[in-house]
Image 1 (tube, one colour):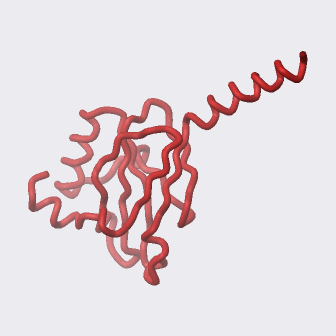
Image 2: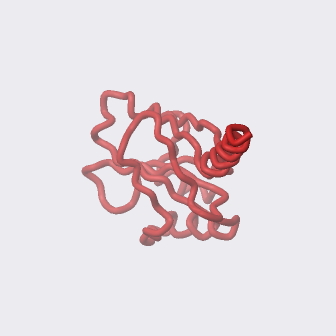
Length: 134
């Protein structure tokens, strides 16, 4: 009987622990130029924050460091979802550039336990985004 209770407890624990993460499969890292870039995830908890961060980045304002999570590794990364976050996007900096990212992805709705594949086709130039009025 104790083994059954322990089994159900471990299932409950696993579902709670793993429900707050996803996997980011960074295919850009497989390119020969991957060491020229730095990657980060930007988090947002609401549509209002998404709009605010879009406006800030288009106007060249400083990014909120609390909204960023630097990706230290490349390839498949298990990412813990911060509390109350609903959206994320990936920002990419060239190592020889300034403080603003060069490239970014669209905002994505967070779905726990999902694997998101991230490749070069999903990146938009910050200069292009700013001129489009997105």
